[in-house]
Image 1 (tube, one colour):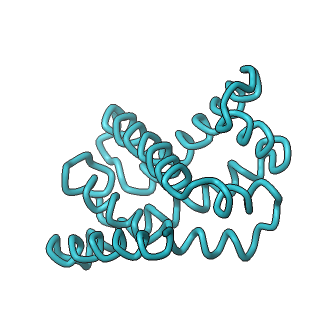
Image 2 (tube, one colour):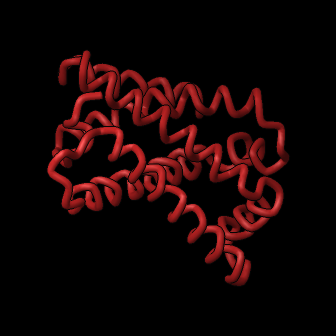
Image 3 (cartoon, one colour):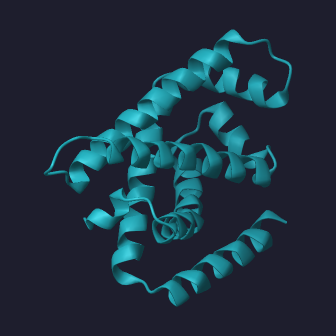
Length: 170
């Protein structure tokens, strides 16, 4: 893997966004066909797509940005991308466990909180494990795009995928 994926830049963030536009579509098709938990199906079939897609993007991007920030302060001279991947996954587990702990301890006063309380009960640690796989896939797509796709082609992919989402979601 190219080390640039572990260094914050606007280009890295841009490729992360483009990768999301591809990976989220792949992940949703896979998830709907493999995971038949009631709450998983509800997430992608009944909840408005802007909520699920926006939530997936924002939550995962917070994890990515946090991991980039933590990695920057690791005092090793010989840092490499695999250390970044370990920090990225550790960050995701901290986020997931913290999120689940908070969600399960607050009153159910929004549909979002109600949904995630039911999801956490039904899926438990499987949620964090599937998040790990999901994020590693997204990271791999980001790396592939950074390595092999120019910015103009990446921009075309992003606009095309956004248009495709409109066609599918409406």
